[in-house]
Amino acid sequence: MVVYGSLVTSSMPRQSTVQETKQESGDRAQAPADSGHNLESQALQAKILKKLDAFCLDVEIAATPGFTIPFGPSGAGKTTLLDCIAGLLTPDTGRISVGGRVLFNAAEHLDLPPARRSVGYVFQDLALFPHLTVEQNVQYGLAHLSRPQRQERAAAALDSFRILQLGKRHTNEISGGERQRVALARALVTDPKVLLLDEPLAALDTATKSRIVDDLRRWNHAHRIPILYVTHSRDEVFALGERVLVLDRGRIVAQGTPHEVLEAPLQETIAQLAGFENIFDAQVESVHEDRGTMRCRLTGITAGTPVELETPLVRAELGSPLRVGIRAGDILLATAPPAGLSARNVLAGRIATLERRDVIVSARVDCGVEMEVHLTLAARDSLALTPDKDVWLVIKTHSCHLMRN
Amino acid sequence: MVIDWEPFWLTLQLAVIVSAILLVIGLPIAYWIAFSRSRLKFLVEAVVALPIVLPPTVLGFYVLVALGPRSPLGRWWIALTGHTLAFTFSGLVIGSILYSLPFAVQPFAASFSGVDRKLMAASATLGASPLRTFVRVVLPLSIPGLIAGTALSFAHTMGEFGVVLMVGGNIPGVTRTVSIDIYDQVQASNYAAANQTALLLLVICFGMLSVVYGLNRRTWLFSPGR
Image (cartoon, rainbow over all chains, first blue to last red; front, side):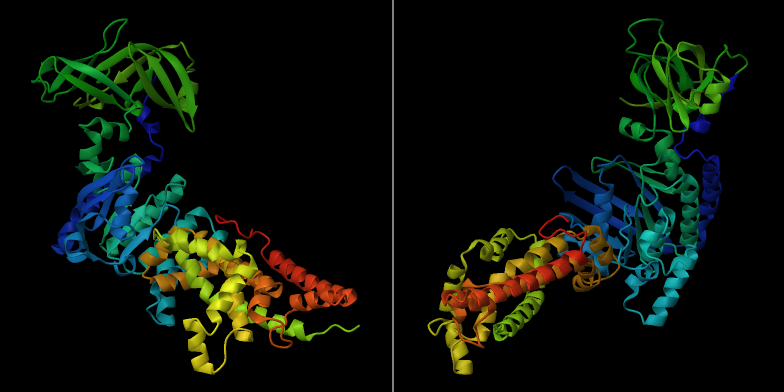
């Protein structure tokens, strides 16, 4: 019996999220056409250099209407980037503009205060005003309007995030998901020209998260503005991302569509971010240009038989060093020697440890090298997996991601 | 023996006026202490805290000098009103404000510092000016600190002695406060009257503080982080 691992890789196990993404990216492909040149004229452009105690943020970004995802480990500078755009931090040098309106320009000593930037910001901890009701929170940014107008706009915003019925409650009397919706409604009711979201949904369960994401996406279809959505969840990147900016230690190390950036990483930092649990040093043994593949031998193995993997063809010399990254969820595990498979890599091994993490099981399998494999609880039970059991690992050629050293 | 109520009314007036004025001038000072990034902040904090450690006679002496006819302030006041500030009720108010300043400013500043900066940032990104942020977010979330600071400066003024004696002297109906009245009675070996007045002052101050702590059960005075 063979277990397909990737069903359980994600921290958001709902497969439908990924399907929605694919459907959504189809919709999005048409979106730029009907918005025409508007996309460019509403874009956020920022060139920022900001030195802080621990690190230095040095980035240049352009974000057109739609979702752009600053992605990276904590401390990479994502929140610093948002704070600079919102005007809560002042860059040392640089220029920030939205749709041609300059918010900050060090050269001209121009630095609009946050209140005049028209930037919506949803903080990681939401920062709802605890002394105000839901309705008062949402009306907070509408002080310049008359009371009836304020009430009407706030009601519309609450309605579009499905929390109209909570208006009179205090923010400590509502659930986590509802609080997120209040924070979004409060930021969006002011009609910002840019929306900054700092991991606003990190604390939510998957179902709530994807419902809120749907509402946010629906809102964005009506109001096409650039949205910077900070996350370090891979699944959110694929669910939302039109464009990903990978940040590491204050710099952008890669950008592009989620598939370009996260599926074929070239740099190890990205590989680690993208959730490659298995990363090995390897050497090119043979190149099969006609078949579009190569064979790579894993190096650094002291004892036992050498391990070879068939990988996709990349431009690399024979004998040159590379690294191979394989996601734990991309590896299939079998309890009998599998036959009749399309997958080109079958490694015999033995389970070293089995460890339950939340709803998945992480198995470490010794097959010359130690590989981490993720399985469902049901898979573990139906295969009666225990430590020391002999198993076979099945890895597709295209699940082997190559990167430069 | 009947209690002489005049010093009580005078002291009460003084305490109400002083704590009201401190509520007004204490807010900007506390705001600056809580939020300024100036390097000179420590100096202002030290000056504000001085009356806590300084002997009231020292403070009173300098206030007296500053209010007297030889100082610019004293001369200006004389030119304006025709009489000196020293040994008047107005002079007493000025001296008491300085003396009780830390008791208002420190709880104010502590509660301002305790307001989550993210809330202030959120207010700013929602278009609010710093003043609007202060009025709509910082002040409402600092109410326990405001009550504590006002009550403390009120109670502190009720019980002050040294500064009053130095600045105001002992003029019945003008500057003779409860504590000076008590001192006078003791000097005159009038212990029964002194005891009655002292007990009454004790009960008033205790009652006030009980009400304040009762209202702010979760708030600790003088804890900067809150």
